[in-house]
Amino acid sequence: MDRSFSRNWSDQSLSESTPKNQGFIYGSHQILARDMSKIVNRKLFSDVYFVVGSEKEKIWGHRCILSARCSMFRQLFLSEPNKFSFDLCSVKPLPFLLLLYFLYTNSISFDRLDIYEVFELMRLAEDYKCDELADLAEIQMGDLADPKTAFEFLPIAFHIGRNKLKASLIEYIEEYSSSLLVPTNEDLLQLSPKAIKAILESDQLDLDEIRTVEVARYWAENYLERVRESHANAERDNTRASIIKFQPSSDDSITDSSGVQNKAATQEKDDLGKYSSALQEALDQVADVMSALRLALIPPTDLLRLEEENLNKEVIPEQSFINAWRVLATHGLQTTTEEKKPLVQPRKGTVTRTQKRKSFIDPQLLARKSRSFNTRIPEFTTGRGFDS
Image (cartoon, rainbow, N blue to C red; front, side):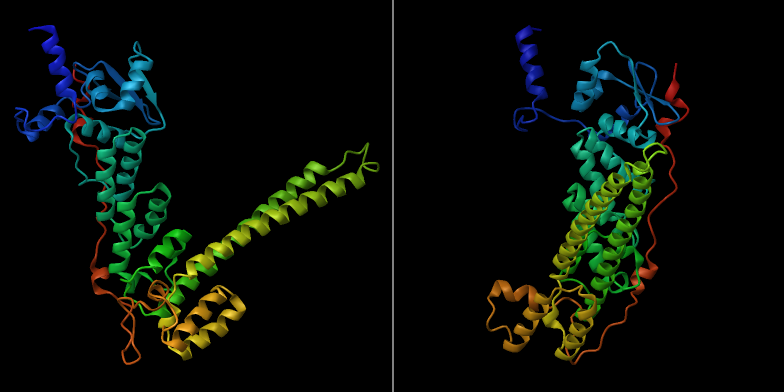
């Protein structure tokens, strides 16, 4: 075969932008995946292995396949071309094996994985820039959500910027909001300010506004309490450290006593400044969260009672009450469309004055079971992985 033709054919076949109408006919991808799975973690014909996890499990691979499918492996092999083993002690064997299985077969099964294992796989896929696998794992996490993990992973989804996971978890919380969003559910306390604000901004909550306020206050009061406790613990630790650090020796206890006191006073002042800054930041975050409440949906009598209760706790910003009273007094005539919508837009569970409040119990949620399973290593990882 002519070399120039061979080179052009290779360049063309590797191009991801090759149109489908250039004469290529593709065989069954199921058959290809099946055949490629036969060489996942097989010692026979492999030319590299990885020492994975704390137990140093050997996992076999093929440089040509891994480098073609994953840029991170390509860089690894190019950086050390004469090395045949790589230590990956910080990586767990199961997600690494599943990553390799996907790279070989372009397929994955989540049937035996719980949401935590899928999360580990998603993060590993992100580390190795395997975006397709990471996206599939993200979708699966949304399908595996349950009453506990929905609140656990929503702030994580915000932190790592996984928008599909955010949407799935918020949708799940909306669907079961009448049972999940209660001011006694400690799982709520796992939410970050951004996460709970996203929930409070939803039109699909099956709650009336008084109940929504109770839930928001429960979260806010506990959030501020945790900030204060965190500072108190840090202050105790700093005090102990200061006593040890500034304690004078027997030789200079008299001459340096005033200097020690000044240093201790300066340290205490710095700690107080840090606490004030942290507390103010937490108060600003809480105020931002509470701005998502729709106080104008609350009847005037209940709104007045709520405002009086807030005088002591000051969890809800005063401006929120001012805006609500203005809307109630003018029936929204003095507000623009954009200003009015978040203040008076009814939620799914908004109760009019002639309606009765709905029960807090959702039979569908009580009947729901978690889809978590006991983890078993796939067949390709056991026994046959060391063919001679």
